[in-house]
Length: 112
Image 1 (cartoon, rainbow, N blue to C red):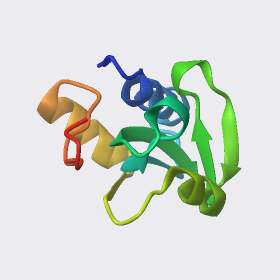
Image 2: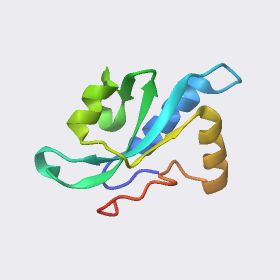
Image 3: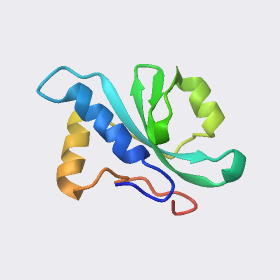
């Protein structure tokens, strides 16, 4: 599901599918979190999706190619308690239930 603000949910979901499908063992975690914007979005809180591979965040949304330590990414994005993590099996169940990339459980302060 692509929104006006970007393609993060679809991109993160596709990343999971590409690396975890076909019964392969998968240690990746899909994350839906409320982040705090910077630059033109300074201070705006909105929903965002990315992948965790252990303690490394992978964010390929909107043409980005970010890989950085979770601690740094969470600090930069102002990510706090409003975070939902999904294993590949959890992700599959949510996709089947809702028929879209997300967010499924995340509600943000701004509604985005």
